[in-house]
Image (tube, rainbow, N blue to C red):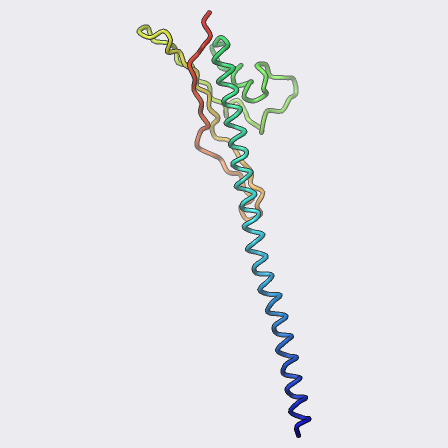
Amino acid sequence: MPQKNQNLNQLIAECNRNRQRGQAFLESALIMIVFLASLVGAMDFGQLLFTHQLLAERVRAGVRWGAVHAWDGTGNQIANVVRYDSSTAPDGATSFLGLTRANVSVVHTAAAASNPNDERITVSIVDYNFKFVSLWIAKTYTGYYAVVETAPMQYKP
């Protein structure tokens, strides 16, 4: 009889081990899903911050260029500096991060008669579309905030 109980105890112990292996696999799979989702979300957020910084640098470059050059009356040259890093649009070139002229706003504020040194230039990027990489987001985000820089004009004819 003790032999029968010993075999039964071994069978029960083996079944319990097999269940624990399955439980560990399931727990690992659930943790891996959460970890990968967090990792991809952090990468998306990092890419969004990096893109915003690139747009801010382009706006600053446009303001710097506009502050030291004569105002052309339309702001197209400054918009081209933001979009192409050149005051003239190159033939067949693609713009920086897919920016269109409608995305780049250039506002020139003329000097007042009481303060002739108050001439200002304001450049902004508005309604930029950002595409997420994450599968669960997988859409285009339109930032309705503007990346804005302003500076006094230095150009004096």
